[in-house]
Length: 74
Image (cartoon, rainbow, N blue to C red):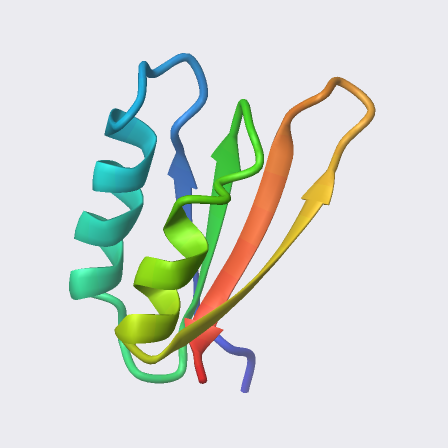
């Protein structure tokens, strides 16, 4: 059985909307699911908030300059 994947596309939004969208999606994230967030920038300000809430995250930059961040429960 594969792990559920929830997608959030927050590209084109002005800060802090990408962070708000991601945090809202995390509040409804099923226990074993992974959230994949697509953003225009590396979400550096998001990482401490995720750690406080018991999540871990990894970001990777794509060739177009956008970022994909995978977030899951720690």
